[in-house]
Length: 315
Ligand SMILES: [Zn+2]
Image (cartoon, rainbow, N blue to C red; front, side, top):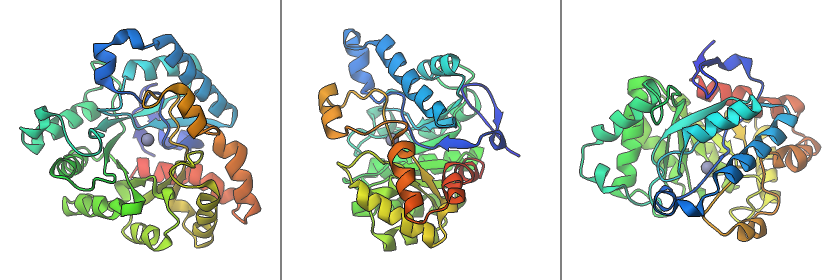
């Protein structure tokens, strides 16, 4: 038994069956929201998040991990409001996404790694944004620009905060440039147990040699962008997942959509055009039936939505 901090207070992980490991209530640029608040419709954002969470609950989802951090407009009060409206607990994150996956704010550029570590530990041990809701995991990102000095610095800070608190880590990755391997290597260099590491977005490739290398390194992998064909087509996501299940890896894979109930990165109509099927429930409606048809068992599906997530979160 291990307890996890949520927006509904600390809860026993074993109490949760179906878990979505990677969905966002809100993805936005926090500077724009601060400078031009007239652009923000808080009511519409809350309604959109509540609607997605309720749809997921109708599919049996009992817990959602929301990896919003600095640069994604993490807002614990929104998450608390969604939990109050729906009854569904959310696990929050702490960490830094990185502007354009490249650089840190000057604040952290000009300070030691320990300044970042202290902020992350604050969220993990005290609470987020003045509340007593603590973060349940750490988050950082590497993408196409690779491991700039700042990206490496965040990775080391996340690792050190994990060592201090025992919190697990989720790393956004760019499989086309195999960033997951370097992220994992940095965490392990710092002394982190790879069982605590999830390499998110690994499903954006069907390069099975790369995926097997991550698994051999001890990481859990996120097959967490179903509905985002613009990054990788669904047919190839499904085929790779079926093969990895056949190879016995269901216990190290987690499913999700990386959906954002609200995202300001594009005008709303462009989001609809780019990802028409994207939602908190796409996997239940369109993907899981294809997995079952392809030879994946219901037990493996349940594992990827349950035990795999609990093992990583509780590691
Ligand atoms: Zn995400």
